[in-house]
Length: 110
Image (tube, rainbow, N blue to C red; front, side):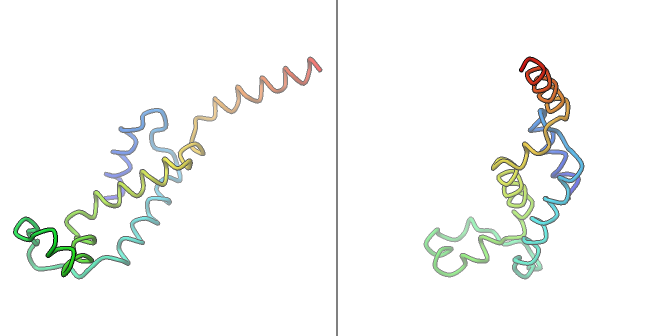
């Protein structure tokens, strides 16, 4: 599952792609979701038969942590974490090299 989610994130964010260490961030998200998951049912539950009020009043936790949507939830959390700024730590090093060159040239002019 980790490799699938990392592959999808890399395809959706081609400017960054997959970089070493991203798997460790995703692994932490997976661990949290695994710790918080509800008991797996023998058969998947169909939420279509229940009204929103019934879900909210009687099955909210079960609905929020439904194992059927686990992958999508993990991906959404991982993507949000990276979009908050973590992805900038994985910028291509060529950009940093160009900044260093510009700084050195500016220092020589001073």
